[in-house]
Image (cartoon, rainbow, N blue to C red; front, side):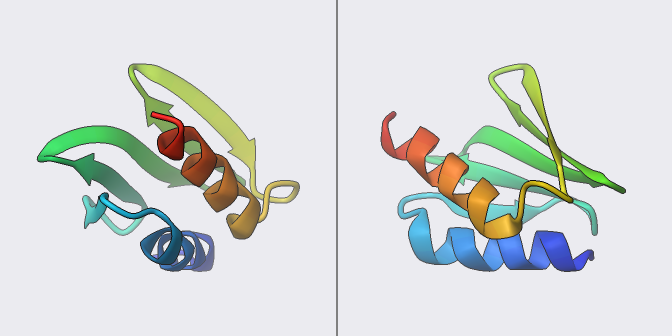
Length: 80
């Protein structure tokens, strides 16, 4: 598992209440709420791909640090 994914998961566990993190593989994890998958996060080398509602969002790991992506996800799911 990449350091980026480890750091992101650690932050999300602390900040994103009501959601579970389920590991799908060493480079992919799912965000689950009420037994429904709401997002998947995939590490693809220099990028992280976040899939929400059938749309993919690509983040460059060089510019988007784990704490910044975690804040984006927390803000998105807190508004739902």
